[in-house]
Length: 198
Image 1: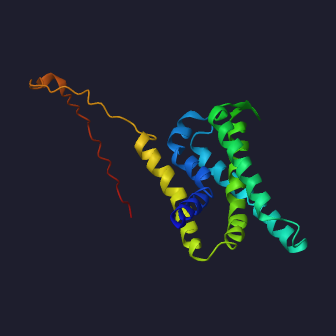
Image 2: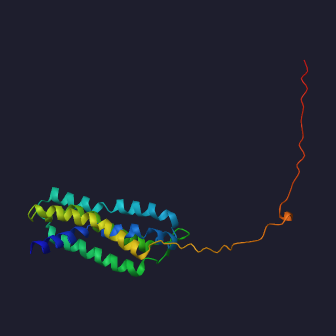
Image 3: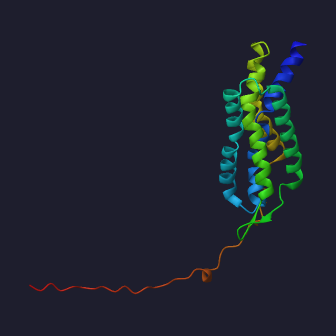
């Protein structure tokens, strides 16, 4: 029973940042496909920082209305929003919209905001919930949180995310180059002399 609890706590910890970490490891593919190109990492950074409004709201509610916010319903809501955002992202990640005289991946960015909102809010909701368990499970929770970055990276490596193949198309030439292929150019040099008058 203890091993099963440790596995469940580890999985719970992995749920904290696995979605956003999964987006970052897929960035080589996203940059090539989405119209933002290499501006996309900057947009993602801003979007993720804006999603810190979630932890701010939870903290303010705990401070000004203590006891009105229970962690369990918030955790279910957070995980539900994350699940819906992941499912929608799987189908709508490459949908673009015309905004300000250009194509932009607005759907991708909005869904990324909700994923970041989930992951940022998990930092202030998962730990208070973990305080209800014996303290030795806290280490397992943090191991799971660490695996939330390792697991997407291993999956991306296994599937070859952003893998480019190099095909050698050069052919060996066993002939010597003809002397006519080299050009010789003679550039006349002009020497300018200045006279110094006293």
